[in-house]
Length: 136
Length: 136
DNA sequence: GGTGTCTATTGACATTTGGCACATAGTGTG
DNA sequence: CACACTATGTGCCAAATGTCAATAGACACC
Image (cartoon, rainbow over the protein chains, first blue to last red):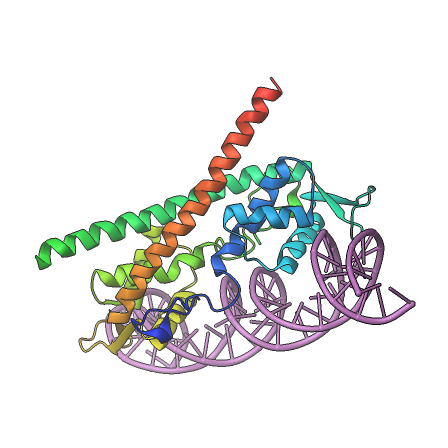
């Protein structure tokens, strides 16, 4: 995961193998649900809004696939947009009842994740400080 | 990811397909590095300590494999333990120089992740509060 | 009317990951 | 010896993920 290995101490940020950080995808679904919680939207629109949440560099097909999956799972519904804009017909996604439930559940889960991270960081911080005292 | 789908609104927590929450594995490597930062340890010992960090339900083979991988990448070194206890020879893992670097890098990454989560949660919180005002 | 460009979405295929079941191996116990 | 307990490691398969290319409409420009 996230090859830091080959570079030794050396500088360049080659820590992302390809695409964007691997952790990012984990937040794609909750983010999409949140965005749809604000109101129905096209896939392409969502794609652009993802940048704000640090998910800007995701490959479009990843996002579209996530949307179709979420539809399969019943979290969202979709329909072709009536009004034509420039370009091919667009799909409009709409948050389903189940999606709201899931979103709520996701926030619980994310809080749990946050606590894990905090625990790790705090633990690291304390230990490193301890080291400095010892090596003083 | 994390099947919430089949159950509709109905209660049961079937959100973990098998094993433990999928997100957990993402924290395995940094946690192991952190534990080894306290000093050398056996795989089995580490395995037991993981519980404290919310990684208790990980399958042993996942942990052992992670350790071997980290060794392959040069983050840790290992040697067979001289002193015999009950059971087969045990491997002692030792944090390598590179591992310390990686651990430091990991904390940066985790802080980033934490911010993503915070942004999501705050954004959700605000929007939901807004809803309540509107629907009042 | 061809050619290119921008907007949108999807499909196909390769690679990576995660998890279970099982293999190995030493030691103690009856 | 059969069994149980401690420790570690492997192989395989399904699911998740990443990349690339294909499709497709509208519009502009020469």
